[in-house]
Amino acid sequence: MALNRRTLLKTGAALTAASMAPGIVRAEGAHWRVAASLPMTGPFATAGQLVAPAFSEFEQQVNDNGGIGGKPIRVEVADSGYIPRNALANFQRAQAAGDLHFYYGDSTGFMELVGPTLTGENAVMMGSTSFASALSNPANRPYQFMAGPTYEDQFEILLRDIANKGGKTVAFVYSDTEFGRDPIEHGRQVAAELGIDVVLEEVTRAEGADIENHVTKLAQANPEYTILQGYVTGVWPQLIGGARAFGLTTQFMGTFWGMEKIIADRVTEQAGPFLDGYQGVMPYRYFYDQDDAPFYQELGAFKRSVNPGFSGYVTAWELEGRLCLELWKLCMERVIEADKEVTPDNLMAELGAIRNWDSGGFFGAPVDVVDNKIGQGRVYRYDAETRLYNPVSDWIQV
Image (cartoon, rainbow, N blue to C red; front, top):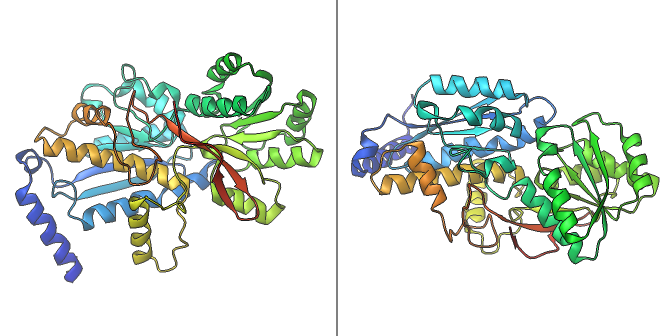
């Protein structure tokens, strides 16, 4: 490897920090390993490609600052194609390659598939793209967590918002995936408690959905509100566009993976402003909301330093991946500071002990991790003219 001033400075900082690190760190291997599966191809490839920078940039930023406990991290990312068995094979290869300190999964399907196997020597602290409700059960999923509220929580936030606005009827339109089906039963229960009538439940393909047929059923049911779940790119804007062309006035709403500004902007540029007024729940601030958000400011400065052409915007999807990594790093630091062994059990114990944490801007309120999740979110509305999602609710704790 060619040595230069930056390399020498980084190496010197890491060596100095390592020499002062607790004994438990010096007893570990040469680096901390992080691995991930992302859907770089397949139906949700756009999401995978937009999340990916979180991993390479996290690796560079952490190592530029001396690593964790004076030890560098190494990040490895593999494509899953959004196929759970592919992600499982990626995970097993990562485990076979040596000590693995954190893994990031690509889907609800993978997290459900791998969860029961995370026992004994196979245990690894694991985050993911998923907000699956089953993950917020430490008794059954002791090593898996999510960087925000569950899909059930997100549905509840939206239904509470509908009730607050006097809404009485709603439709649930969701993809035929684990991701899509996850919050539906809970949504029925919450709607009933709030006096909201679920007038339609419509299941679609995750891609290539029969838009005309689904829009016809929406027109027949004529709900005041329609909540879309289990989509990333193609289907949800098509459903909204088809409904608007049909003359439907139902208020469309979505959950996290249907709330990316870049997708809404592309649709607006290519097909017109029919997403104007679309609403949904977001666990985080958008990156352009940097007041009292020092982490966002720091990340933006880093991105500009390595890429002078940086647009100034970081996708919500990338922020989700980065927050998973930041939570793992926080737990690592706390375990090391306590001079405890870096084990999945010790890391998850530290995660579960997080109370009143200042996230640096991700969330609008201090963070508590309860049942392996962070139960807060906010409803935002898309403005097609300004190309911004603007808040239309306070931060809601669930």
